[in-house]
Image (cartoon, rainbow, N blue to C red):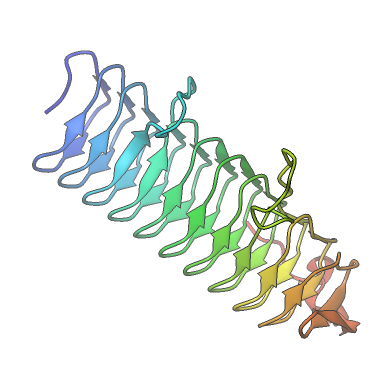
Length: 239
């Protein structure tokens, strides 16, 4: 079903049993799979692909969000993914199957979001970031450009684990440009990884990681410096 107030560009393909809501804008050469729901006011750029059974522009259950979901050009969204109202996806990005982007999540350009990733609300992600399978990124976090997060990384933002006697300010994680996190690592609330810092696989990070430093262990402690050949300044430019 296509609402009469929806605006469709040229050569748009819409699969069986999909719903395009009021005031939705679809760019040129957009491909929508079967059983897709695109809620009101969503803005979809040119050459975007959305897989079967995905939901675009879902309203949060506990609040109303005024900003629509926006997906820039040349983005691919897999099957069974949910992008909430108020989320933004930059151009040339890839979102795999079973991904959840909560409200007020902003993805930069050329971002890769792997299968089963969950991005909670109020998250800022820069350009050329890669989040691999089953990453959980807690609310109020920030990942700057060129960050890499390996599979099954978990972050948290409540330092009292729901036992604070007073209202608390949630503290997400901050990974600065070129920071990396190995598979299965855990980052506790408010942790910062400085530029090109690296948390090794399985680490439990309780303190900030200095620039170009590798930490490992439980709790994570400095191990050695990041080799110079791995510095961003010594790698070929990423387009």
